[in-house]
Length: 254
Image (tube, rainbow, N blue to C red):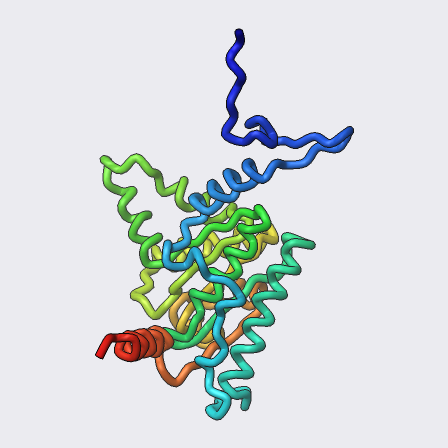
């Protein structure tokens, strides 16, 4: 008697496709495998895998303190920046050639978290994203100069140039050499010319960026990205740590 076949997914019998009459659709099991692979390739920090727009907490932004330049409260700025991030996702799903985002603000103001909210929203829709922390990425490029390293500079550069959506995290006040500036210019210029959106998080305002990266790179960012700002009076990570310790004391027995 022939043994009955067993499948990991009885719904599609491991084919990845479910047919209903003349209509075929992607099975849920295959969608999960595709999303898992996309997440692996995206390079998001594990701590940011759960970042969602719903978890972007506006209570950390003051309703009393105001930005000197715009006159808006920190809360109003954050609300507008959150709306711009949501709008980017909606726009990209309709047209992959939308403008990028330039998210600026001090350390601990939620820039990276919000960029990862965008990334996760797109990944959940099966779209490709590449997340790079700028200092780490530059270190990886320098490491390719070692003959023992099997990854080439061209591979790292091409991945950043050609990613459908690129997130450059922590474009901060670093020691930008001519080599560094040329690398970033090459990537941003390529992406602008090929209408590929880029999201940047930084503590440098767009107006001050030319001091660090030069006019060529700054000009391209002005053309390619919508500038948004997040301001806080206290580092959100410090606030969250304080809240966590307070809860622990309240829940402790005795």
